[in-house]
Image (cartoon, rainbow, N blue to C red; front, side, top):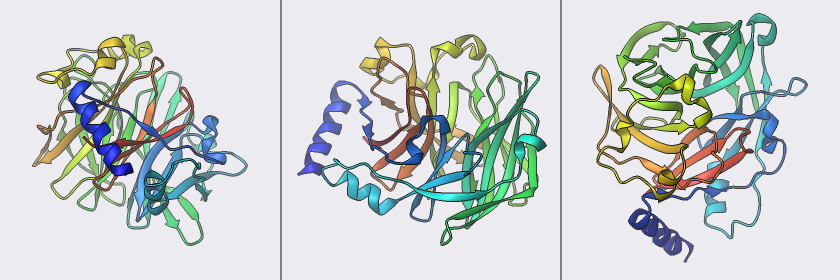
Length: 322
């Protein structure tokens, strides 16, 4: 019965608003602390990894929810909150080693090897770094190697903008910059690194206005979805150009009403370039206050899981696929 209701809801959303309503999955425990500022989602086997930007200094942790429990919650009465388990971190003192260290921004896995992006800002200069670690899931411990730190060259210096997205590609790593609008980053590209953090090549990426804050994994056809977000308070620094994503697409009702933007866009790796697919963007039904979505992951063929940092609060949500 629940699946029939959900299917009907999705049909109505598609027919009348072109927007999807996020279904919040309530969280219990430490992972719900907005001061952590959740910044990334990814899968390790059948476990969703929740990565905060700022880990606790006295007890640094990432967090984990099983896919089984997430799906069980979606198919149940949805009246109980889920409590993510803690993954203990063995972490170098990045605060001392990297001037202006500002925490974690993206994460992915190659088998049990974890690859993360961290960010810094010092004297107005932004920097991004790739770091590497090893996850022992049986012991719920992730050890970050202090010797495996690689700076990623930024295409342009914009306040609070860096590389925020990372995904696995042919046993290599692809990283994407956050600001790719035509007026701030005319010829954006995705950078490719090998598993030892050595830079290999780059591939072109089409201009995208606003911010790109996370991506899903690739599917069997080399397609992935990207999280595209805009907070109007960043208009001056992002200087948005024409929003080509909405060409030929009906704008959602709440997107007509508000200036902020919350949506998902599908891309494909096509040889030496990234291209948008013909799949229409997924526009989220907006609230009056924008939600700073920072993490994105697929949930099988059911839809997506997304997470908000601290603005307006920690929110883990399921986004049904149209």
